[in-house]
Amino acid sequence: MARKLKGKKNGKGLKHQLLNYQYLEKKTTNNHNSKHINTTGNKSQTKDKNTDKIISTSNLPKKSASLTVKDKFIPFDNEDSTVMLVGEGDFSFAKSLIVNKYIKAENLIVTSYDSGVKELTLKYPNSFQENYCFLTQLNIPIFFQIDVTQLIKSFKLSKRTTWNKIVPSFDDKKIDYIMFNFPHNGKGIKDQERNIYEHQILMSRFFQNCLEFYKLVNTKKQSTCLAGYLTSSLTGPSTSNHNTDIIGKVIVSLFCGEPYDSWQIKLLGKQNGDWKVERSNKFQWDHYPGYKHKRTNSEMTTTKPAQERSARIYIFEQKKKDKNQQ
Image 1: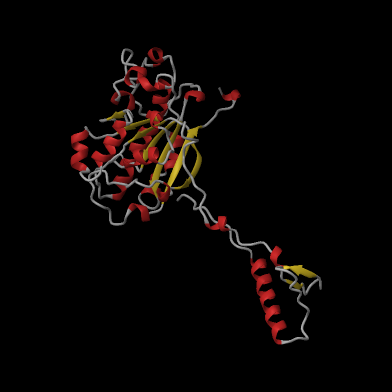
Image 2: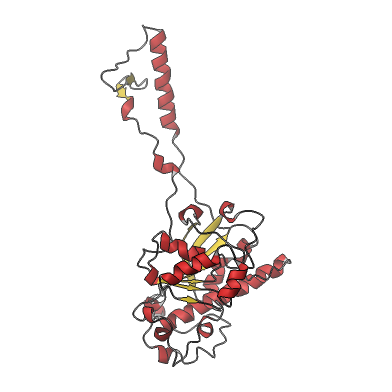
């Protein structure tokens, strides 16, 4: 299970000093022969019973409000980062990224596993059309029938149909991030062991495909790089050498608890492309206003609202090899 971040605890010393001050002040009011308290100006003072010196309580450290406020965590470097979202549902997450200025419209690609607008409208009748129209008005590239376990094949990349022809706006751009938000195969498998196994297969192939996809689309030598890609079975991690400069990062968000913990997402990344976790943090629902997590199959709500469920974001990067190992 992913370790939860622990917040800082308030020191007991401060509380003790304040209580001591309040006690002495009350005692002085009731007993004129008690220790002297000087209230010159707006600064209250009292004697330290250990040193017998006058100390100013106004200089005592105050409880910082920042300790109770969560640090904002957005998985991208800045809005100039380029991102491809895979496995999108009703497109509300994609819209949220743009509205909240986490990513510029010209730097976003949105993909869905579903067949097209008609299927998604039937699946999400109350939300999809509005989100879809918002994205299309900004000319954001949207692709349907994109299988995360067969990215190159799904985009129909070939020696003739290169990436710059499919997404002309990304001709001079590398993709920095591929993000899979709350992955699920939608099969509704009741047997938990089989359910876990099926999703481990899904994520294993996803990690493998991300590596192969990055090596293809983030280099200008596409015709040369395509040799052998479309015939590759992708049944195991790539053993070929590659330039880590062209390999972007992979972002995965998952709910905490079972069966998700048993997927062992970190291990799957390591075993399928030598991905390692660069950073991880809680998924902060409040920082994505407008985003409403949807079930893979429909708009039906889950037993517990997603926003009330604990989740994490994992950012994977390629493990850099020592020069001696290359």
